[in-house]
Picture 1 (cartoon, rainbow, N blue to C red):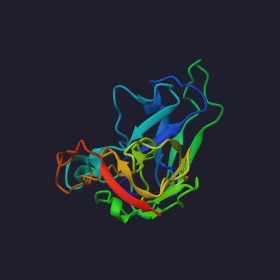
Picture 2 (picture 1 turned 90 degrees about the vertical axis):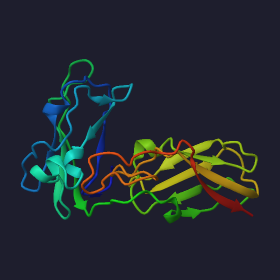
Picture 3 (picture 1 turned 120 degrees about the horizontal axis):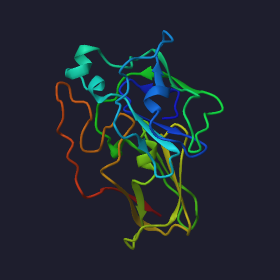
Length: 237
């Protein structure tokens, strides 16, 4: 998430690099630094296989789910990694190597303030919809009360016109991941339309339309999703 204020139960971070990287060193060179300036031990879930995109330019880093879910495991033993009201930083050390074996030119850090947790399902009925005028190529804009997962949001929404066919256009997501903008390749027609939302859509805390990620005292479960997209209808003209 790119915002400067993130929920204390934020689940994942995406770290984007300007060139292809070499896998295998994130555990040693990516850390969460707390308000005291020290690295927080056990903040991340370290997997045997790191989560890179196919181009090796985007690394997904997961905060340990056991420290997020209340009343179970590490959350009880050592507590959450993030606490509302405190300042934290994700730090990437310059010892990470790119695909050619060269270290980063310099270290990087992203600082943010932890905000109160978001522990409820995504509700599209709470979104604000700014409609375009028919006969124009004005953008359709959806605004969200909470930041959504940038990578998932980029491919989870589809605009469908009155013919039932998906509309082709350009998608833009703002820096805080709280606004989605669709600019069509063709002009809008009067009549019914809808936005189809893939049920795999998540916010930055892992909540979906079907369920909240963190249900107190529950280790797993309650994550089943419908295979059918959620339809958000709107009418032009």
